[in-house]
Structure formats: C-alpha cells, structure tokens
Image 1: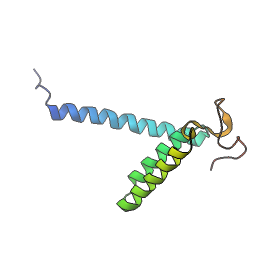
Image 2: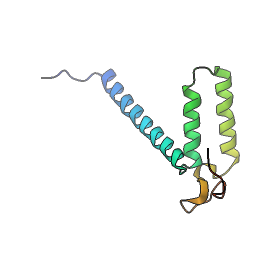
Image 3: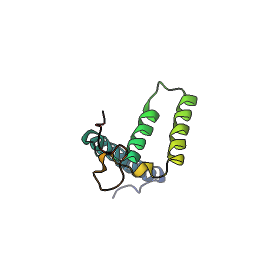
Length: 101
C-alpha cells in the first residue's frame, strides 16, 4: 500500500500541472507568431513572459516595463483581440499589408 499524499506533494503536483500548461500555451503562442496568426493579447503575454524570464533586467526596470504594457492595454480598448491581417474575420491591427518580423 502506498503512502498517503502529503499536502506539499499535492501542491507540487498542482503547480507542475500549471507550469506545464503555461509552457504549452507559450509554445503555441510562439508557433502562432511564427505563422503570423497570433492575436495581440498572445503577443503581450509572450512579451511579459520573456521580460519576466530575463535575469539581466533590474527589478525597477522590469516593473516599469510591466507598467507600460498595462498602460497600453488599459488605454487601447480591444487591443488584445486584434489579429494581424484580419485572418479571423475580426479587426486587424495593420490591415494585413505588412509582414511581422
């Protein structure tokens, strides 16, 4: 008979599952970006994660970068749902005339 799971082990399993889901979401976002099919919300999420992962950014600079992202999202209604080139039938942020690099 196995040992009963402790609270710490249960929490660790939940955190691992959350981390796996986040990694998979970021992988899909990166694939969408490469294919030119990412929504601005996904790009913002990817940018946030990349800023958060960088060890060469001072904490005050990191905080300021996040504040700037939040300000843009707060003042630009509907930004997160925009797609490049109107591929999904909704509004596009560039009309599909330029290629994302």
